[in-house]
Image (cartoon, rainbow, N blue to C red; front, side, top):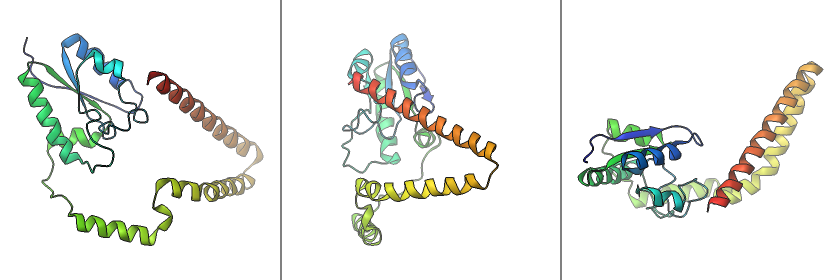
Length: 201
């Protein structure tokens, strides 16, 4: 049976979008189309929480991992790819199900996007050269993080201690205790999330 229309599923990270899209696709015979700016990259399956190979086998998936991580990709290019995918899916009589957390993608697809020409390669090269000249420690993300971890940690710790001693003892204990509890929760959640993803892949 030929179906009309398109289903859009959007929301924050880990809100269950992918599971919902898969359930809808199986029930209605739909095709899932990626609308997440990071899940387009083929080399980043685990860290972007792309659907597993098992999930992809349960229903057709489009625009997942179709771009090399070294390639410059934009919302404009995604709109072109998405429109082509949607047209192809509709011609096949299937229901397109757009799912992702990149609001700009949804906005550009539904409201349009200005036809901005691509940045000339020489301008890109000039900006990169200037960036490396002014911020040599930022030549790679790893270099930056490793170079700044100690400074940031000491600064944050010093500022927190300075703030604490100016407050009433009971209130500073409450704030510090809450802060520690939140950090512990985030670490625990991230650890369990990474372990789950490793088991999936």
